[in-house]
Image (tube, rainbow, N blue to C red):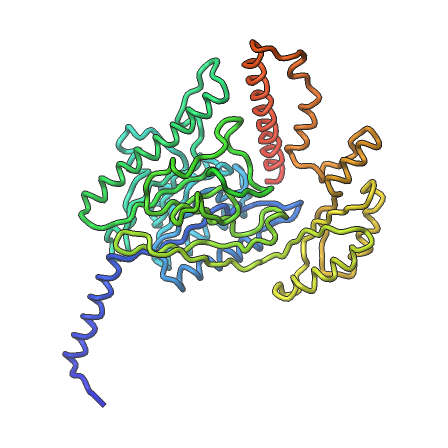
Length: 459
């Protein structure tokens, strides 16, 4: 057995500490998360228990993986006026983060209220939390430093530079012009967004150069990128103008943490431009997705690895496509599969039937068929093909509101209007294009207005 003197042991400790400090100067680990939607109601059901369990789980990940910073890329809340318990969960989470010596960067999303997030940002700044509620004029130096800043490690040394971009509202970056077409508005908005990123990235490059340290540049965003897969719960964010931003429009940052899309995915087949997705399923078509947060490791100023941290399912939900004859059997099979890992929790169900007429006649029968199973039926609807067939036979649409998306509701209403009441000539082509663009704008505007009204009623 080899024995070491007291002095030798002290030297070993000092050497070990020095090595750790050297490694920490060149290594950083972040968690990228988004779209929490605190305060959401799901067909009348509160998600408070799921959200609280997720936040508790997230705090455990920070501790277990020694995370330096968490980036929340928008949509912290589900509505601009979240219920008080949702705000309390948000502040309690920030308070709990203080004991873990981990920084928090919060970006506003399209669901969030700019004023509500901004009102507490100075107070939260004293709690190692940066809140960026909106984009501001980057020609003003103080505004630029609010959106581009260094992330420091636990020793107070700069580790990275972040271009902190929240949801960009059109009014913050462009001014409307009379007579401007929808196409021109789309181009103007995309150019303004790209220009904003370029200004922030240029400033980030200056900070890296001035530091004389190898540091990665991280950018954020809350928008739709071109080619991504969306879900039913994702809301259109730009009314009748910009649909999606191409991947080559983003700056050449080392990592780009995006929010708004609820399905985790890479953008443009890149490794460094990513959506982490929502931590819980926010619509039934997300039920089969493995929800996650992303853990990104940086070494010597470059992205090294991105690891999926799978979020446990805190509330099982499922969509069952079946017939009345097979309903009981299909639900039994579903329960046997899902309840293996769900602690015998009630499963929230969306039942889609393929061979039935009016729903009002079969609701009691459905409830009787599933009564003995640990399920709760939140939604019953017929297949779209069945509804179309019945409409053709009866010459009227007998769909219930639960069976229709907001798009379908407003498309049906707008189709009752006469947009072009004559044959198009060459001179009419521009009129036709503008008229159809106006129809699309109205459809999206109506959809968003109703969503906001419904959301306000739930809060």
